[in-house]
Image (cartoon, rainbow, N blue to C red):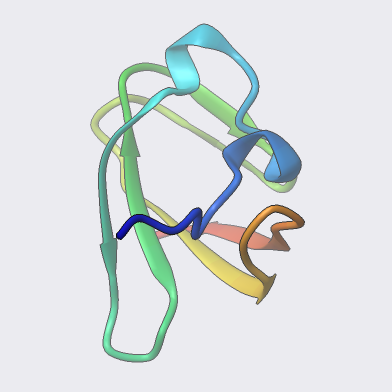
Length: 70
């Protein structure tokens, strides 16, 4: 069974280079991601070599939260 956990388009991942190529969950529940290229989400800009952390206030089809660099 599959379940939508993070809808990237809800939280600023809308560009072609912002496709998620790796994802994980940290021990505190935050989501860590890597993208295929340069990424610019609310509050953070990063390159493909950077890891981003998403601190969710809501997950699923109506994802919401804040981004920071890992």
